[in-house]
Length: 287
Image 1 (cartoon, rainbow, N blue to C red):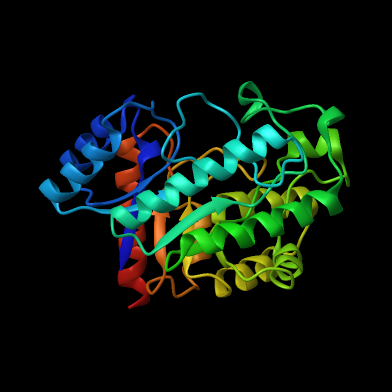
Image 2 (image 1 turned 90 degrees about the vertical axis):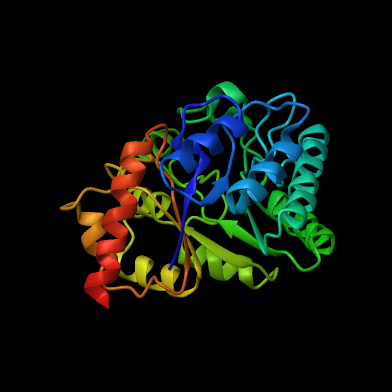
C-alpha cells in the first residue's frame, strides 16, 4: 500500500521545513501542494532532502508555489490567468520529471475567475463565465499540457460544490467535474486519468442530492488515485479520520490498496498520523 501525506498537513512556511517536520514524524511519501512560500533554492532543497531521506514525492496542482499568488484556472477566459496557470503547470511537470514522479495531478477548471482572497469562502455570481466556451478552452489547453507531460500521467481532480456556494449559484454550477456524469462528459472529449477527492465528493453529493452509493462506487472504480479527508458534508474542511466516522466506514467496502492514496488534513500532523493509522487498520480488516 502506498499512502502519501499532503504537505498541507504542516503549518511551516517553506517546503523545506515542511518536509523536515513530516520526516521527523515518520513520513517518507509526501505529496507537495500549495500553502508554502516560493524561494530561490526550493528545487535544490527538494532534491537534497529526497536524496538524504529516501523520499517519494508527488506534485499536486499549485506546486511549486508561484512568486506572486494567484488562483490557478486552466479554464479561465482571462488571458493573463491562463498564461500564468499554464506556465505554473509546465514548471510542475518539469519538476515532476526531476523528482522521478510518474504522475501529476491538477484540479478540473472553474467557470468563474476567483480572487486569492476568496478561496475557501463564498464568492459572488458576477464572475461566472460561459460554460461551453470555458470547457472547450480547458480541453484544448489540457491536450497541450499532455504534450508537455510526455511520460508523466496527468490526473484531473474532481471539484467541490459546497452548500454555501450552492446558495449563490443554484443550478448555474461554476465548477467542472463534480460527479460521475461530469466525469463521463469530460472523458468523451479528452483522455485523462481521474483523481477522486473523497472529501470533495462527500460534499457535492449532499449539495446536489446525488445517490451516495452510486457516486462513490462509480468514481472510486474509475480511479487509481484517491485524496482522503473528512468533513461535515456541507463544506470541504480537510479534517482527519476518526475511528468511528461514517466516511471510514464507507471506505471499508472498497479495495483501495492497489491505488495511490493521499491523506489531505490541513495544518495538523497529529490528525494526519491518526488518519494514516486508521487507513492501515482498514487494510488489515479487508485483508
